[in-house]
Amino acid sequence: MVRFFTAGESHGQGLVIIIEGVPAGLPITEDYIAVHLGRRQRGYGRGGRMLIEQDRAHIMSGVRHGRTLGSPIGMTLENRDWANWQSTMAVEAVDDPNADGRGQRITRIRPGHADLPGAMKYGYDDVRDVLERSSARETAARVAAGAVAIRFLEEFGIILRSHVVSIAGVWAKIPENIDWKLVEDSPVRCADPEAAALMMVEIDAAKEAGDTVGGTVEIIAENLPIGLGSHVHWDRKLDGLISQALMSINAVKAVSIGPGWETADLKGSQVQDVILPVTDPDNPWQRKTNMLGGTEGGMSNGMPLVARFAIKPIATMVNPLPSVDLDTGEAVQAHYERSDVCQVPPAGVVGEAMVALVLIDAFMEKFGGDSIDETRRNLQGYLKTVGPRKVYQ
Image (tube, rainbow, N blue to C red):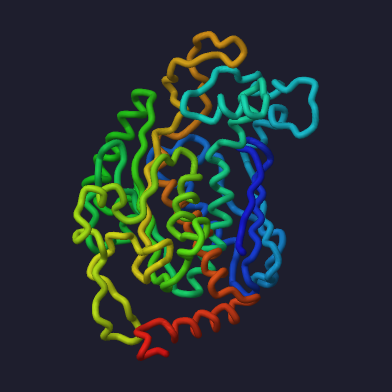
């Protein structure tokens, strides 16, 4: 079982990451993880926080001489902005929490954020006790953990990528063969340059109005072996696990595997992916289409895994919405906490991390070994059995 934990607050000293279950012998470096953390920090519509932080995870345990040991991997990620919040976010009790000018109680609740349910659930009288942990800053820790999972999947030829499908109602025309370098170079991580330009216009307009915008992202995982996940229990279905992982990302409100909602309006003959006759014994069970997004019955079916998620506009706005005060219940303007105008482009990088963390767990459940070499032998042995039964058995 591969699982991960994160700890830390947005303006605290930093983030802590633990990922366990990764087999021994996986090559991994801080430089590799830093590449993915850097991708998360980019994107048109990002706020001032990205000018402060230069994220780099420090590996503290579980790796020796550039390879995993099989023990839990521990990492820390410094918050450089902590220097400006030391009184407000001090661990110990302080005489003046507002010594840095930031420690006044927050009672103006933001619609669409975790403020109100979090304060009610935990009995807080200061919304900062909620917003510090519910902040999307925590996704940097997920990307650090996800980078380890992505590096693992690369060992077995599995490649994860993401691109933006829409922002603020502007939809990209997705080419049949996506130019992934173009996506990485695009300020909005979009494969359609014309749509990307219009997306940036919408982001600029929202910024000018003190508003925010959301959009849609697509994650693609290629070269997955057939049979990850399971049909026998609800909580082992691969598409269900991926959906839960993506829905857990801040502000995500919808997830689909493949076209998803669009298939509800089609006939069955238009949706099912026809299986082609086996002509290549090394590559059996190919399909004419991938309408089901690479899963059937809660298992990978050998086609590329395709998942989309929709992220709502950010709840924190320069021009705040009407709201109420936590103390009195009276009408006020919502609190403003520094934030992005659009977080759709970096959300794709976070989505890659979350999908990778699901896939490494499913992969190890199916092929698990204590080392990379043992896991590879298990996979190779399984692949020899995958094909027409009178040929392969």
